[in-house]
Image (cartoon, rainbow, N blue to C red; front, side, top):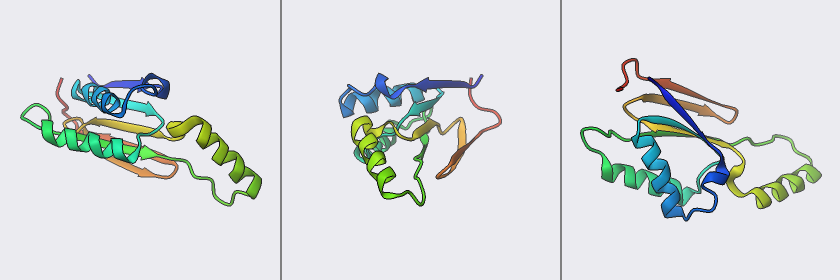
Length: 125
């Protein structure tokens, strides 16, 4: 059975970077595909990948991760100011992150407006 778990950003917002990465990695290690509102900081994403590499074994083969971040094209000056204020107030809530175990997620294709997630046909139970 395929399990998708949605996590609002405010569930991890107050955690330290270390605890945030640990929580996300534990969910993925439970063979769940995680749909995270928002995105990780670049440093947190790098730490997640580093920890993943350290914990790869016969049961856990790694993670696949994709991030979509909407960028407005041809935005006028006032809308740019508004967007910058929203980003300042909300932090990393804009966007959407999808991650899952490599044993289930075959590939994640992304562009600025969509994410396509392809699963393996016979993923583990």
